[in-house]
Amino acid sequence: MLIGYARVSTAGQSLDAQHARLKEYGCEKIYSEKVSGASKKRPELEKAIDFVRDGDILICTRLDRLARSMSNLVTLTESLSKKGVQLVVIEQNLDTTTTQGRLLFHLIGAIAEFERSLTLERTSEGREAAKNRGVQFGRKPALSEEKTEQLRADWPSAPDKSALAKQYGISRATAYRLCSTNTKGEISNE
Image 1: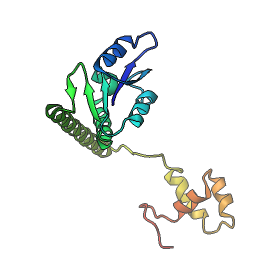
Image 2: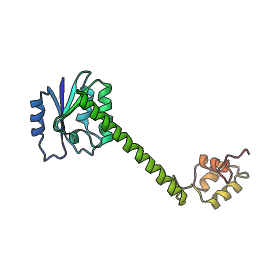
Image 3: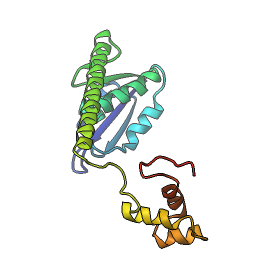
Image 4: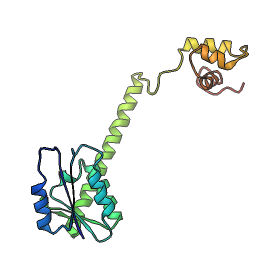
């Protein structure tokens, strides 16, 4: 079965031209929506993907109507492939029912994978450089070092640990954690 998908970004745009192209191509069912391509929620595309079955072909007029990025395209084509569904993009002449079309999608997938790897590498390098500059990641400590030392000094003699934690403006669990670690952040055996 040939299933079409049409999308425009704004309410002022018309789906008519895409519908005409999809009907001309032979689509028996067309899912369409007016939503930005940047939006992560595209309910009609999700319905189309849920609807298609092994042997079906999902058709759209242009690649930018279907995917918002290369990685998004790869994810989409992988989910379609798992269902045994082919993909045709009319204007870019991409057709996974042909050998050349499958090769092109594999190349696109390889490029997207390479792009993801470079991004992860750059992110890791940036994080490491920031750490070397003294940037602290994560949440701020619940207490300053000075207050933590005071809490540790008060801890052994405190009859009500919950009241002591409340006095410092922290939870009982945080107080226990702070008092059971030494100054190097290691769990003490006390």
